[in-house]
Amino acid sequence: MNLDPNIDLVATSMAATDQPQTLFRAVDAALKASVGHILFTILISHHASRESERFYTNMPDAYPVGGKKPITDSPLMKQLLGEGRAYIGYNAADIEYAFYDHKLIVSLGCESVLNMPVRWRGQTIATMNLLDRANAYNEAHIPMVRAIAQMALPGLLMIAGKIT
Image: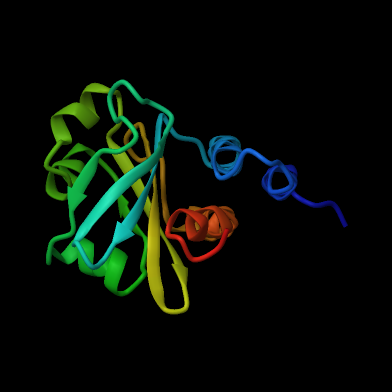
């Protein structure tokens, strides 16, 4: 049986000493190769302070590391953070519905999104956010994105101070 090279890339990256950035770059590359994206970010959820913080981005000029967003009681936040279910937005109207910064997103050529919660012990630790041209994502992408995203868990737990 042949292992998907994208999965092997992420697994191999975990042995590097420069963590979690090496792992996050490998996740970015694996997701780019397997399902594609223009913009990719990782936001860790700080439930106590009700905000999400960007810890990785492939477009630091538009979306710098350290940027924060409030965790609201919106249906989207409840779906991602509370229920742990992925969100797919198919077009620019879906981007406008879901994101206050929709104009910037669309200006980057992104008109669809796949937000994937990364979960541990029943709680969403972070979200992986893939954005691309219109209609780039569908339900069939969720299992691959989830599998690769969950492989980032050691790095996310490291950031959250749960492991060293």
